Structure formats: C-alpha cells, structure tokens
Amino acid sequence: MATVEVRDLRKRYQDFLALDGVSLKAETGQLVTLLGPSGCGKSTTLRCLAGFLEANGGEITVDGESILGTPANRRGFGVVFQNYALFPHMTVAENIGYGLKIQKLPKSEIETRVYDAMKLVRLDGLGDRLPRAISGGQQQRVALARALVLKPKLLLLDEPLANLDARLRDEVRWLIRDLQQQSGITAFYVTHDQSEAMAMSDMVAVMKAGRVAQFATPREIYQKPTERYVADFTGEANFIPCQSVTPQGEGRYAITAAGATLELEGVPGITGPAELLLRPEALSLTAPEAGTFKGTVTKSAFLGAALHCEITLPDGSMLKLAAEPNHKVRTGEVVGIAIDNSHAWLMPEVAP
Ligand SMILES: Nc1ncnc2c1ncn2[C@@H]1O[C@H](COP(=O)(O)OP(=O)(O)OP(=O)(O)O)[C@@H](O)[C@H]1O
Ligand SMILES: [Mg+2]
Image (cartoon, rainbow, N blue to C red; front, side, top):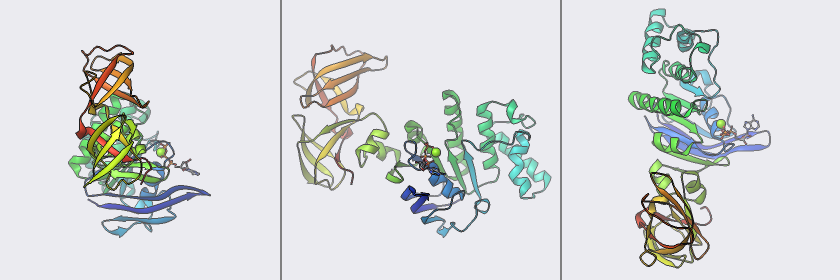
C-alpha cells in the first residue's frame, strides 16, 4: 500500500505548458479523483504518474521516495486507460494473466490468481472467450482484472467507464469503488463527470488549465468551493454579487446582496469584492414578505420530484431552485425566497 505525493508537476508539449505546477496527494487506501473539463491536464498528470510521460519539473514520490527515475514497467502500478485495448487474439484469461506470464511466475500460480481476479470482477466462466465475444462492460472488467491481478500498490484509472452506457457505468463504477476499498489500494481516477467524482472519491482535485484549482473532500468542494470555477463545475450553482461585505472573524461575514442582509460563512480572508453562492438546496419558496429575498418567477417546470423555478431578483440576478413539487407558481408572480444560511457560502469574486 502506498502514500503518493505529486508536487509542483510541470509538463510541456513542445511550447505548450500542459501542467503548470500540479500538486496533490493520496494517502494509503484513498481514491483521489482528478476532475475537470477537456484539455485541463487530467490524462497528462496520470501519464506522468504511470511513467508513460516524462515530467519537465516537479516531483512524484511513493512512500516518500522519488519515482521519477523509475521506468513505467518497474513502478508496479496497475493502469486502466480508456483506450488501453485488450489483446484481441488472446482469451479473457490470457489477457488477465499476461502480466504475470511476463513476470515468469509458475503456471499454477498464474492460473489461481487469474481465477481469483475473474471472480473478483464477476467474469467467472468467461475465461475462454475472446474479447470480441464479450460486452463492453465485460471488456472493461477484463481491463480492471488485468490491472488488479498484479496486486499493484497504486491503481491509475483514466475515464475507465467512458465507453459504457449509463446503466453499465453505474454498475462498473461501484464495482471499482468496492474493489478499491476492500483491497485498500491507493488509486487515482480521472473523470469529467462531476457526480461520478463526488460519489466515488475520498478526495477530489478540480483542475483548471494545467493547475489544481481546489483539492479537498467531495463535501468541501461542493459546499465550500474556493472560487466560482469550482462551484460551477461541481453542481448547480446560483451566484449573487454582494454590495457590502463585513468580516466578522473566523471566516464569517455579514453581507448585503440583492437588497437583503445575511450572516454566513465563506472563504477565509476575503477583503475585496465577493459573491454569494447559493446551491438549489439553500433555497425555498415562501410568501413574498416572509423571505430573505423577493423576486419574480420567470420560469417554472414540473419535473415530478420537484418544481424547478427560475426567479429574477431586483438586482437582475437569477436564482434557480427546486421547490416542493406541490407548490404552484405562475410566471410573473412575485414570491419570497427563504435562505438556509448553512447552505450559503461567500466567495471572493476573483480567485485567490
Ligand atoms: N502529445 C501532445 N502534444 C501536444 N499537446 C498535447 C499532447 N497531449 C496533450 N496535449 C495537450 O495538453 C492539454 C492537456 O491534455 P490532457 O490529455 O491531459 O487533457 P485531459 O484533461 O485529459 O482532457 P480530456 O478530458 O479531453 O481527456 C490539452 O490542451 C492537449 O491538447
Ligand atoms: Mg484525458
């Protein structure tokens, strides 16, 4: 098992700086997700970890020892990449056992370990099939078993579910998380799916143009984002500019925004302009005079489990909220909006 630390990692492709000082850490047994839009450097980070790419600066350590001088095949990591194809002419069992054969282990040990790995990922009985004769989800599980059979100290997964349909994604996702937790293997997982990152991870690194914008637990990333980019990328978010901000000490602030006065928590040390983050669950509809804010309904849609509303405030800000489904509102109606301050959060307008 392994603690893995990436410090100030830099990677240049010709004159393009793809990684501009990436730092993150996985404690033993943690699953750390790299989350971010296309092109932000997720795969590049993972490829540097795997040893498929050479970094131009920074450090990667495993249990405190640098691995930058160790070639990929000596790092002892398991790798499952989106396009890491299976060998088409080998059976499922041969694919899974390939790495062990290279290590020249005795045939009987290979057989036992392949059998155990197939059972682990629920591929029992499919060992003699060729990859083209099994489904996409099964192929993905073969790739996973092929990595796990080597008992790696670190598992690297780059969008391993990208080719699967929604139902299979869900199934294989939980299988990965279960196996990873049961075996206590440290893992890095790449995705651009926000809900996948939130559901699976111990820690999430939200990446932005070759850097880590925030590295924290899923809960913190969602409830206490350090900047608008992170808030936007991790779920539905409403932003309201503040007219005044008065620090109250210990990350608490008194603010005025869209004609209302609020006291709430926020990013520590805000001194300049700030904006209020209101997730949909911070908001509920009330009578016009009873709410913190008063606004006009500009859109509403009944979605079964909730009534989705868009409400425009006097300062022009727009709030999206999910109201109790039996609530009835008309477009143009003036409503009150109650705020649950424990779900509200203040952020600096410019990233720290
Ligand atoms: N071999 C290469 N040569 C030049 N530029 C590259 C190369 N590989 C990646 N890049 C660039 O580096 C940046 C980061 O790429 P990377 O593959 O790490 O992104 P990513 O976050 O994994 O994106 P995606 O979600 O699309 O897979 C991108 O702008 C990409 O165009
Ligand atoms: Mg990628």
